[in-house]
Amino acid sequence: MRIEAERGDITQQHVDAVVNAANSTLLGGGGVDGAIHRRGGREILEACEQLRAGDYPDGLPVGAAVATTAGRLPARWVIHTVGPVYSPSEDRSHALASCHSAALRVAEELGARSVAFPAISTGVYGYPAEEAAGIAARTVRTADSAVETVRFVLFDEHTRALFAAEIGQG
Ligand code: AR6
Image 1 (tube, rainbow, N blue to C red):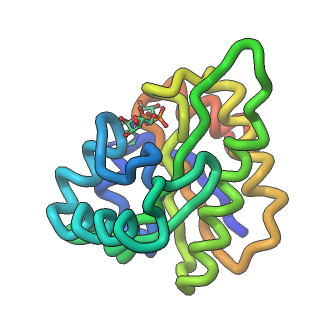
Image 2: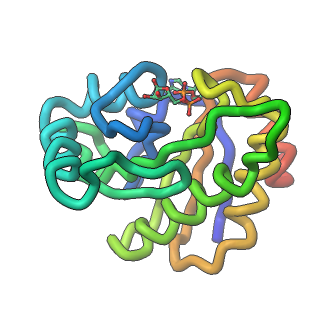
């Protein structure tokens, strides 16, 4: 698997699947989630509403992942996952790792060969970016997945450099 880290906007990625840092409601929010729904259009929200009416009446659990159409985004699918809210007193790294492994599993089921991830949980959910980068990189690196390319797409240079260091990209 090829693993990359670059600065950019997740909604502009020409990959098979982009991962959304969603919340359990699946009905939208700020940050990455807001941008994906805004740019992707109504079709994504409608697909999420159907998931809520079907398999996920109580919402998507933390660490789980589920796919929908990508609407008007350049990608084919959005894989929604719910990161943990950071806690200084409780180790929630397993939940953050699970977001990455579950998203890769869903990608593989879809037949997606390239997947773009944002820095899940490092915005509204408050995870320290350096810790999150380590967990994300380690989980993706050790995943036994048919996905060929994983691209971490980071909004700012500081976060890009942290992810680049964790994946060993100079
Ligand atoms: N492309 C790439 N990265 C982005 C973009 C973008 N367009 N926009 C923001 N980031 P966040 P979370 C970065 O808050 O912490 C939402 O309201 C941002 O700088 O989007 O998992 C959901 O509905 C940060 O580094 O996700 C949930 O309620 C990173 O993406 C909650 O926020 C993640 O920030 C999820 O919080």
